[in-house]
Image 1: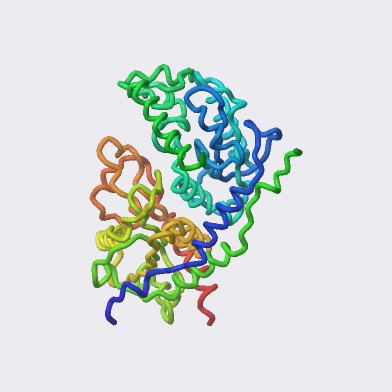
Image 2: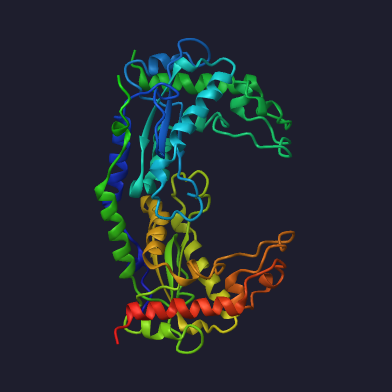
Amino acid sequence: MKFDRNKHVFHSPDFEEIIKDTIRFFNGTPIQIIPASERFQGTGVYAIYCTAKIGVYKDFHDINRTSYDVPIYVGKAVPAGWRQARSANTENSESYELNNRIREHGRSIEQGAGLKLNDYRCRFMILEGAESDLIGTAEAALIRSYKPLWNSLIDGFGNHDPGSGRYEQAMSDWDVCHPGRLWAKKCKGKHNSKKELLKGIGVFISRLKGEHCNG
Amino acid sequence: MKFDRNKHVFHSPDFEEIIKDTIRFFNGTPIQIIPASERFQGTGVYAIYCTAKIGVYKDFHDINRTSYDVPIYVGKAVPAGWRQARSANTENSESYELNNRIREHGRSIEQGAGLKLNDYRCRFMILEGAESDLIGTAEAALIRSYKPLWNSLIDGFGNHDPGSGRYEQAMSDWDVCHPGRLWAKKCKGKHNSKKELLKGIGVFISRLKGEHCNG
């Protein structure tokens, strides 16, 4: 029998619809403070929104004033062991991965110079059971769609302490702009220029404002 | 506003249907020799089927005789960079990941003692574009459904050369049962007993035969 590649290609127009549904649902979830007012179980996807009125991010107030349209960061919290086997996922809903991840981000914002935690809000979507397989897809779709500032231009917000023996690396762009995390100060490599990074942020946000605020 | 976890949980019955469709499509793809008769592009999921008439796997001949029902191994070939960002995936179809992965497995079988490459066949499903996000899900569903011998009881078939400085680890179960891969011989750790492993394979396959061959 002749080899026919087409017989091996799976197409699923329904899958693209499901990704769109996922994003629509996400954008309709309630806005929450950081950390959320109640500790909750589950894994999934989240976005962080800035509404600062002053400082380098002040234009986010206008951008996100009427609704929370433009995240500054999007991330995921996956079930333990997700990068390996991904077995039955029965225990996902008993973990606090998503809750904990958002709370950690809150601590980074509190510690970061020039940032006030109360200027930040979040959305999150819990994906459990079979739907937990959508976590990576949903996160990627949100990042692709919004290109959030702290996922694109300014890297490092989601970093963890690299641990002893690995401090030869450079401080991340996020830590250069918002110094405060103790472990970040230990990173000894040559980092980017704060002045240049802040200039980049200015350009990025004025473009965003042009796109999202008419007049 | 009171915190209501339920407002954050996304349910998608359609997604479970899509996973089932994916598996049905997979099971309908043409059986191919290893390596495939033509080099092909793409990423996706594959299964390897044994039809040996002699040796420790001889009962697979009866199990897979009429159709290829019971894989001995299931794996995936993901786009480069998949474990990191997962960006637009535009270049997937230009890679040969799936083709190369299956060809590598063919080499392992050729080198492994007690195995004949012509006793093995494969199925594969190409998942590209948006569907490439289904790769991990489809692989996990197939493994969950079939619990293939070389994914469960006998570990190590899909391993790569761990590289110099990491040969203190033990030879994998697969390499103990089917010695031949040069790099595997360098692994110096204490490995499992070949006799015990082969006994386990015997038990595993007679159970399979009971489930799949009536009379």
